[in-house]
Image (tube, rainbow, N blue to C red; front, side, top):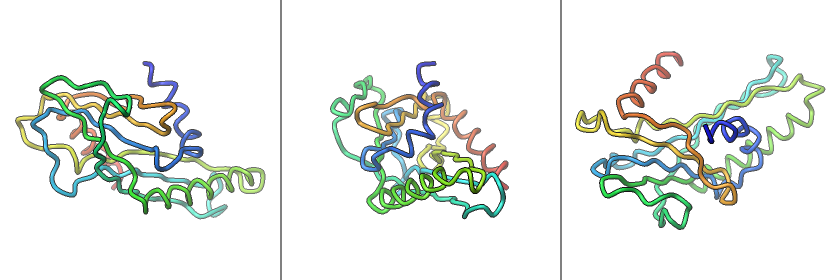
Length: 175
């Protein structure tokens, strides 16, 4: 429940986030090794309230694996059978996030002219989740940081089976 206020502020926090500080941390079973090149994707979509009022933004920004001490990042030390996978935005993704931030700030400034819009944010982790049945009932925790000062907050927690089920449901609904 501590994360709920942060989740509610996430849209506005994203507008002011420093892209270099934006990070996703996933705590998983220590035996889980993501496939080479599998990274989470930050999904950002902006739709106008009035169709055609401005260009729809639908971006998928790839993240990259980050090597750093989790304690230095403010994450708790995992137990012996768990580990953190920490991802940050690649330089190209950081530049694109700045462009999106500036675009959305401009849209907000002109809200009276175009009727405003909506911003949705998601993290696609399906390429990172292990489909090995040995991990089905292991715990998966997703944490997000939009600024170092604010630190990480929990996005979602559950079993790998639940995570994969949610990914399948999201894929079906997007068709």
